[in-house]
Amino acid sequence: MNRRSFSFLLPVLTAAVVLSGGNGLRAQEAETPVILNHADSLVGSEVAGEQVKELIGNVRFTQGRVVVSCRKAVQYLVSKKISLEGEVEVLDSTMRMVGDHGMYYSAERTAEAFDRVMVEDGQTILKSGYGKYFAKDKRAFFTTNVHVEDSSSILTSDSLIYFREDQHSIAMGRVAIQNPANRMTIYGGHFENYKRRKTSRMTVSPRLVQVDTAGGRADTLTVTSLEMVSVEDTIEQLHAIDSVRIRRRELEAVAGTAQFFTKLDSIVLRRTPFIWYRSDSGEVNQLSGDSVFLHLKKRKLERIYVRGNAHAIAQVDSSWPNRYNQMIGQQIVMKFADNKPTEIDVHKTAISLYYLFDGRKPNGANRTSGDEVIIYFRSGKLDRLKVVAGVEGQYFPERMIRKRETEYNLPGFVWRAPEDLFRYRRPPSGDVK
Image (tube, one colour):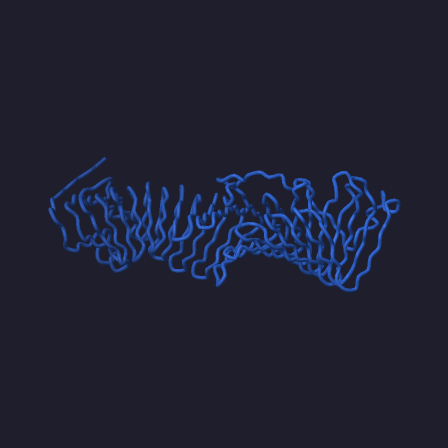
């Protein structure tokens, strides 16, 4: 290699020196110049026919509003690139990017940082293995173990793009967003956040996991859908969209859409919602209607409102698989205590069908209708039934209904419980598969 070198020592170089190459003043006019603010020493040389300048010790240079500092820098005058070593720092207004070493490209006004990269911008702190900042369009790209923290959440991903002016970020590959305050984590493969609009969107197999340890045992809520959208309005909301499935130890549900009010501890299900919960004795109960509102208190189910074409169906006994206790009306309200039903109130054209037993022996069924039907439970089991106004009733003896149970089902009867209902499996805490 042909190398001619010349050097001189600058104990304290503080005067502004223009670091430019190529055609001198014409190059400076065509682009914002790089100005050296300080270096302890400077060594000039030629490598492979290209002039280079080595800046050593407390190096600091600027290009426009961008300020770069490091221990050592090597500037390639023709290539218009500067290699950076030791405590590299890049500043642009409120943004600060640091790394062990990096590169700066003056023509493009871009900076790269490698190894133990950290970025601070306002209250947000980002860490990664690699970062690249595009000063012209205020854009940054990060990859390798991306970790972002702000005042309320922690995000991890394989890579991330951040647009500073729009405050728009895109995270890709094994994305996880944790909210320590409510023990909620959302996983997915692609995440976009629009900070100014106070909205964000998770796609590619999104999954929400919330762990509740109240009462001394862990109880995990999981939600899956095709898309999840978060809205930070006057009331913080999370929308699960398309093919929604909700799982919890005592509860499962499916719907076209689900709306979570995280601070109000409530969920609204729409577009053909179905809910199932299991009694202490193992029988499965099903609720369905045009919309379902679930209200929880301290993470425990307190009340369910079913509106429009409301149906409540319960398995009678596993020994009689075709027999289901049923209730229909325009609205059903269910009350719970310790996750056990205490009361069911059916409004507007209420009809109930209940199978009777003499001990373990089946004894026909009762069909009752009225303006309102109220069922009371004791220890989670049916205790008594009350019918209000317009009461009509009919008893079907056992000889009439045996092996013909499906003929007595109430209008609109649909039993949809999936085969894997309540097969509880703790979701993985890491990668999305």
